[in-house]
Image (tube, one colour):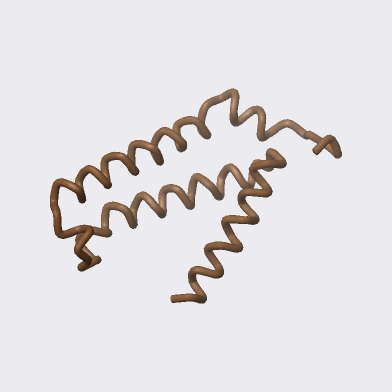
Length: 94
C-alpha cells in the first residue's frame, strides 16, 4: 500500500508543477486523475468496511459533496478559455 501512495504522491507533485506552468499534458492528466478518483469515490462505500461508511446518510453526503467538487473542477478545466490558456506557448516566462 505504501508503494502506491508514494507513486500517487509523486504523480500529484508532477501534475501540480505542470498545472502551475500551464502545461497541456498536466491539464489532461489531472482530468484523468479526477475521473479515476471519482470512480473510486463511488466504489468506496461498497468496498470499504469502516465505521465512517456505516452511516448511510454520511456516506451519501460525502459522495455528493466530493463528486460535486470534482465535477466542477472537470467542468472548469474543460472550458474553452482554460483550454486556450494551457495551449498557448508560454515560453520561458514561467
